[in-house]
Image 1 (cartoon, helix red, strand yellow):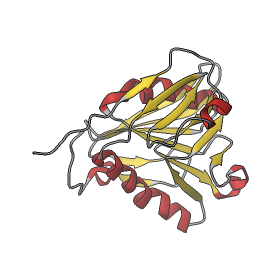
Image 2 (tube, rainbow, N blue to C red):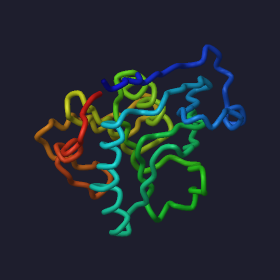
Image 3 (tube, rainbow, N blue to C red):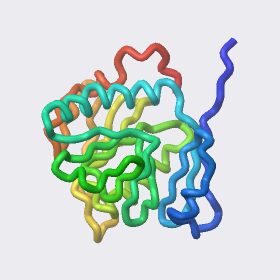
Image 4 (cartoon, rainbow, N blue to C red):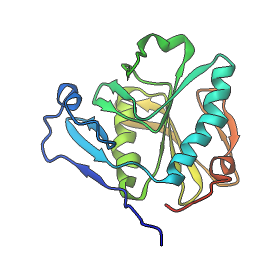
Length: 200
C-alpha cells in the first residue's frame, strides 16, 4: 500500500518578515515565501503538480527560449518584488531583453508571466493572496493552473488602484491557452496529458 504524504501549508502569525529574515531560514526542502510581511511555508508538491510544471516548461518555456523571446525559471528561486520579499512561483518567464535583473539565485523585478499550479492545501494562497500581490507588483500576466478542473484562469492588466488584475478569462479543458502578453498558444489539455499519476 502506498504511503500518502499530505502537502502542508502554513503562515506566520507575525507580519515582520523580510528578505533578511527569509535568508536565514533552513534549506530543508520546504518552500518559504514572504508576502506583505507574512511568512508562508509549504511542503514539496505532489507528483501531478510537478508533472504540470514540466509540461509548462516543455510546451511554453523551452519554445520561447528557442525563439529568443524569453527565459524560463521554476521554483525554488527567489523572486523579489514590492510586497513580495521573496516569492517562489512554480513557473515564470522573463523576456530576454529584460534579463538584466536575473542573477544566479534571485530575480529582482516583476517577471513577464507567472504561473502557479493549484494544490489542495493552498488554493486561497494562489487564487487570492498571490494573485493580488502579483498584480500590485506589476506582473503583466498571471496564470492559475487548476488540476482538479483541468482548466486555466488567465489574469492580465495589473491595476494598481484595484490591487488586482483588471482582466480575467477562464480557459476550459478543451480550450486554447493563449497568453495575453507573450506569443504563446497551446491546448489546455496538453498541460495535463500523459501523467502517470493524477492524484491531487
